[in-house]
Length: 291
Image (cartoon, rainbow, N blue to C red):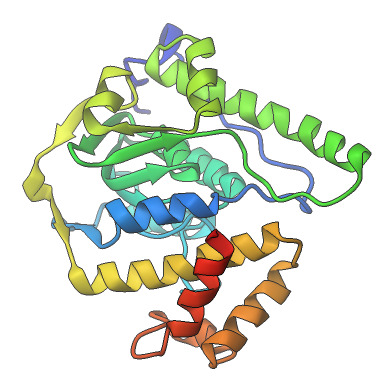
């Protein structure tokens, strides 16, 4: 078995985080975070590859728009293929489904050998939870780590919303406990950072204990074609969440967006939706939603 991370309180390695019992509530990344990822981290990829490297350059959870996404099932499969060896995990993700992120964290913590996390561009929201699974965490000087409270879209009367709020509290507390144990920071400070939806640069993340060292600049590369694809898909993801916030179901939101694109269903088959398409209608709707 590997040794515990030196920053973990009392020398006890982090245990499993709680997984939700209710399946009708999902905690997704806010639309604004996709804007931040598009501006600062889209297209960032690692140069280093290896048969013990797991790359997470996508949203957390299954992604309708690209057919990809990082899931616990896929990570577990990769770990089985790697076997009883140290693992390197490279992250550039805006987050996604927080509960899927918790599951991935738990899967990584169960690996028998050391796990090194490298934040290549951004580890936001659910991706920041995954980053905490590392025995060692490295981050790029121009990279970001973002933490915040669970963010959900809920519909109902005051009793329904109060029940949802109370149901979410243990998950926020679990994140506070995890971040505090990993960093050695006071729980009260972690709560303030989460309430403020705090973005930390590489140096800030190290100063606060969320990482140990900076990555050298030559460990990363930005691919312009991938950047364009990332940004186009992010616009779709953010628009979907914005429509859901307005009261639509996810299926209705996706149908509306596909209708505007003029290629209903194409997104499920095309891993890079938007290539060569007319995005004028999409851009107009996004501008309207943001105004």
